[in-house]
Image (cartoon, rainbow, N blue to C red; front, side, top):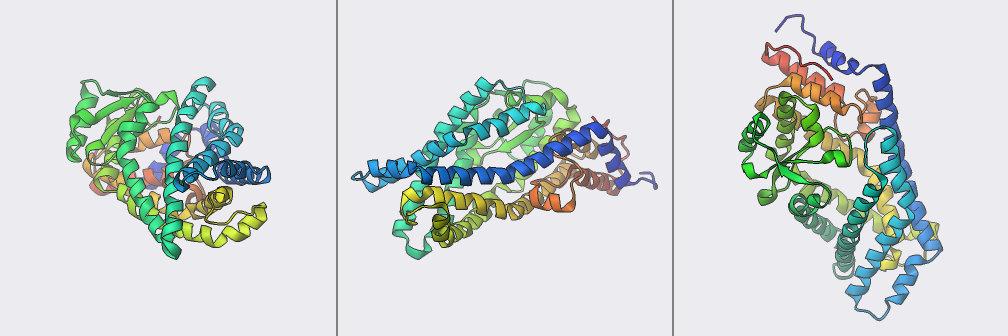
Length: 395
C-alpha cells in the first residue's frame, strides 16, 4: 500500500463521485423522511383523537357486550387497526407511494401498491388483534407486573415472526426464485456455506416491484433461514459488489444479531409498556377518552402513547442497530475481503440515505452508520491489510 494513501480522502472521493445534484437530492429525500417520521406520530395521535371524538371504537365495544371476553377483545383490537389504518390511508398513500414515486424510488403502479397494502392490512389486522389479545390477557391476569410478562410475550412473538416471515409472509409480496447457475450463484453458495445455510435457500426476488433500493438480506432462523437478493442488486451490481453486500448480510446472521431483536428490543418494549400504563390516565384526559386502562376501547389512547414513546426511544434503538451494521461490515471485510466493492456498493445506497449527515442527525435518525463513515472504515481496513488492488469504480 502506498505510504501516502489517505483513507479519509479515498472515502470522500467515493462520496463526491455522486456529484452535487445527486447529493442534494439524497439530502432532501433523507431529511424529508426524518420529518415524515415525526409527522407520522402526529398522524397517529390525530387518528386516535378522531376515534375517541366520534366514539368509533366505543360503538364496536358496545356492540360486542355479552360476547366472551377473549372474542370481544380480539374483535375490538382488530377493529382498532382497521379503523385507524382507514383514517390514515391518505397519509399512507402520500408517504409510502406518492413521495417515493416523486423521488424516483419506486415505479410501482398505485393499483399494485393498494393491492399489496390490502394484503398487508389483512395480515396486520389479524396478527395485531391476536397480539393485543395477549397483552390485555396479561393486564387481566398478571397484576402490576404485567408489563414484565409483556416483555416476555413480545420476545416470543418476535421469535415466531422471525421464523414465519421468510417462508410464509414475504412470498405474499414478492416472487422468490432460485438464483440461476453461474458465477453469482457460485459466490453466494460459498457465503452460504460459511454461515451454514443450505444451497436450496438462496433466492432472488423481484424487489423492483416495490422500490429501486439496492438491497439483499439474510432472513429467518434455523430451518427458515435464507439468503435473498433483489433483482435491482443483481442488475446493477458487479460480482464483487454482490459478494461484499451478501457478506455483510450474512454477517448479521452469523453474528447472531437477530437475537438482539428477540431479547434486547422486547426488554425496551417492556419498559415502554410500563410507561404506557403510567401515562394512560393523563393521556386519556388530554384526548377526551373516559376509557380505563384495562378496557380494550382505550386502545386509541394506548396506541397513541406507544407511537410517541417509540419515537422518543428510536435514538437508542437506532444506536443498537448501527452497532450491528458496523459489525456486519467488518464481517464482510474479514471474510470476503473486498473493501472497494463494499464501498462502491454502499454508494448505491446513498441515493436514499444521505451519506454525510451531521452527528446529531445520525444519532437521532440513522439506523446505519453514514455511508461516508462506513466507506472510511472499509478504506482503513484496506490500508491496515495492505491490499494491493485498484479501487472499484464508484457508481
